[in-house]
Length: 168
Image 1 (cartoon, rainbow, N blue to C red):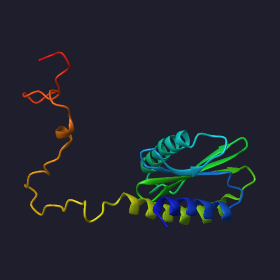
Image 2: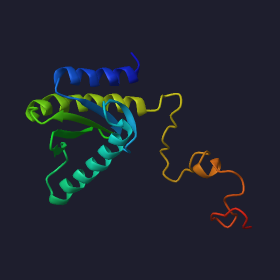
Image 3: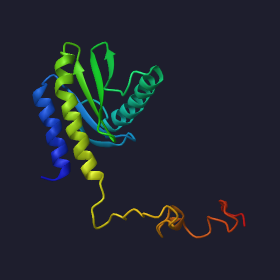
């Protein structure tokens, strides 16, 4: 089973465990959609808002000294939106109706978020063949390929700054 299928299978497992879940989205920490099913809403927007909301919740938790954020819960007139960190680099968002037992949702979604986060981390790890081994010498030069090497010729001036088009 490839990783995309494994991510979707885990989201389906969560939805089977808590049938009240009307939608679930897995997003990268930067707000880009990884996987999800959310009838009636754009999952790309939900992914972006989930990342923003979780970032704000995490900042609140740090500010008041209550430790790491476990989830962010938004209560709406007709239900709940619950956002969970999924590992270090992903976010699980669930949408449930008002009558949902949040304790049961948390009991199922927290471990699911951990599993989804582990799957997402596995996807993001470079393979051995493409990984650049870290240098043991802190003064060693950087790898040959840098972001500046990818720019079109003429955009970087010899004086070390950006050169606007039409200006020499």
